[in-house]
Structure formats: structure tokens, C-alpha cells
Image 1: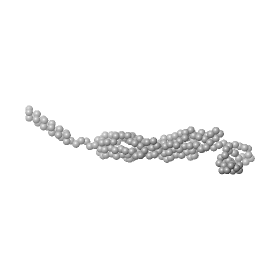
Image 2: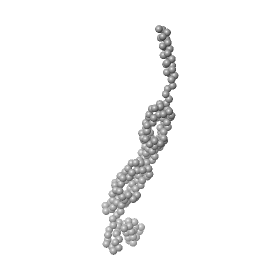
Image 3: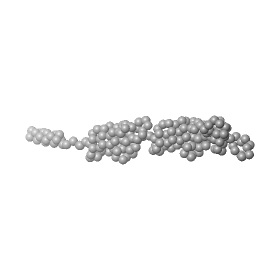
Length: 199
């Protein structure tokens, strides 16, 4: 019995030695950073093969997320660890500048001069002054209200208005503006020419 006991103890000790000598599963490094214009949420570190880790790109004000350095546009991005280290960068770009204003003889309900992320939109309404009319926008659109969808380029729009005319019953049929529309001199001749040539 004693021999059997010591034999069992020997086997147990040998098994423990082999268990301690067994190589641990390898780990791989994950390092995710961000370019200017944003930050990244997620835990960098060492992970074993088959584990997953999630990272989220967070743009700063005036910027938007474009893609990860591996080409993926997923956000959040889930990474499954394989047999290699991983280095990624979240890439950001400055949002387009949107400027929307009004010419003389009217206003818009919301003056816009800010940066918007691509894919977002802003809606404005042109409001002519009393006795005036809305002509359209500087890009040719006559939509009112106007919803502008933001792309990747800066946008500049102006709401255009005009003042009405007065029919003085002239034989020529000329209509006169109710206000000076571009005289370059104060004399009557110059004012008459510049006030009527638009109508």
C-alpha cells in the first residue's frame, strides 16, 4: 500500500510540473487612436485570440467621423482578435460650413452660419418685408420654406427679394420702383434711368 501511495504521489507531482510548464495562450496588442477632430472610446490593451472589443469614434464640435484606417465605416466598430496585433486610427474631417442669409427687402427666420455634418439638414423660410416679394434663392431654387441637405462641400445661399413697382400711367408703360434700386448719382436723370431699367 505504501508503494502505491508513493507512486500516486509521484504521478501527481509530475502532472503538476507539466501543467505549470504548459505555455499560456498568447495575447495580441490592440491600439486604437484618433486623428485631429475627435476621440475614441474603447479599451486598448492585450487580448487573446477569439476575444472581441468595441471602439466608438466620437467627433468633436465642427467635425464628423469619416472612416477607420482599415477602410471600415462602422461606428461603433467591433474587433475580433486574430493571431496578430491590431493598430487602427479613427479618422475625422471638418464639417462643411453652411451660410444662409437674406438680401435687402426681407429676412429669413433663421440666420445660419455654422458647420453641419454631412447628411444632416437645415430648414429656413424667406420672409419678405411689407410690400415686397420673395424672388428665390441665389442658386436658382424658389422653394420656400427651403430644406438644405448637407453634403461634403461648403454651402452659401442668399434669399433674394424685390420691391414692387408703381404704374404711373405713362404712355411708355414704364413701371417705376417704389424706391431707389441702384442710382449712382443723386440727380433725377440718373435716378430715373437706374430706377426703371429693371422693369
